[in-house]
Image 1: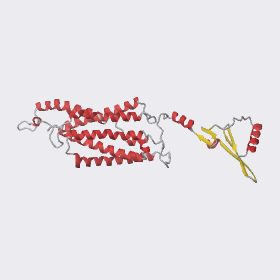
Image 2 (image 1 turned 180 degrees about the horizontal axis):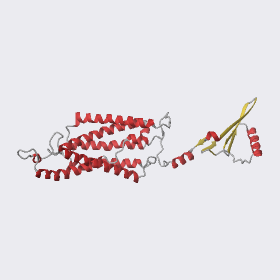
Image 3 (image 1 turned 90 degrees about the vertical axis):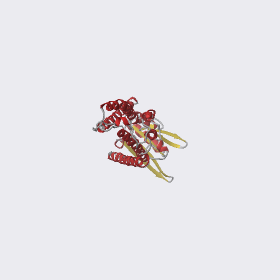
Image 4 (image 1 turned 135 degrees about the vertical axis):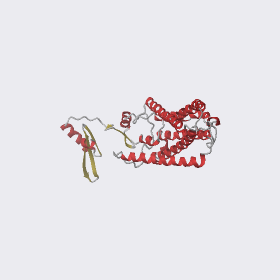
Length: 341
């Protein structure tokens, strides 16, 4: 420890003109002598040279990782080399500099329980945003056509992803918004948009299910949606691996987020597969809903036609839309942990 190896001795003497001070600083095998009593400093050097084998290196230029420069304006110290070595050791040498790396009056504590509470609070705020999205859909958006609603919501999803990019590039600090407040707003907005996007997909899934096999067909659609989520997670993990983004190395994280946001708008090219009809109208053709006389079951030919047509269009597009909509899903609460250095 520095305090165990550092010794500071102060010598002073006074006369009519006032007190004069000489300071001797010893750290391991390095010695610094300073003060305003030049006569005493010269005498101290002679005594040290008699008692020990020392070498006078002249004016102080570098000591304990601190660069020292003297000019007419005064003495200036800098830890630039020490800082660069530290950034290189931690793999953060390529990070963009910011004016305020941490919040003002930030208290450093070894206890990490506060971080867990912070992430939990942010998730709670996100749940409120999700609930607000449900209310917004129920009261204002449930009568819009599927294709129009999914177009605008998916477009908003791509723009909402840019909020993570702002956080990673630290642009929020230039706007005077601390990380904590920015992440709370980002999480709330993202969860609200995601919920508004998910609600019409649920309605569409239920309307694609013909009478008699509703449960089986709905489970099939949800399984395909989960397959899209799983493939998106694998794709996101592969991208982070290729860009060498880890818990402590995230200089290329902004690139991964930018690629994710671009892929989020890809489903717009597949919206022609989504019906134009209103959410309150029937989607399946009337002939599919025909029943045999005296029975409540679908005709066998109708079921075969259903599996060939709907499964080819709806299921295939469902997987593509799900994978590209949710690809490399990230949340700002976890991104915030990157900046808790």
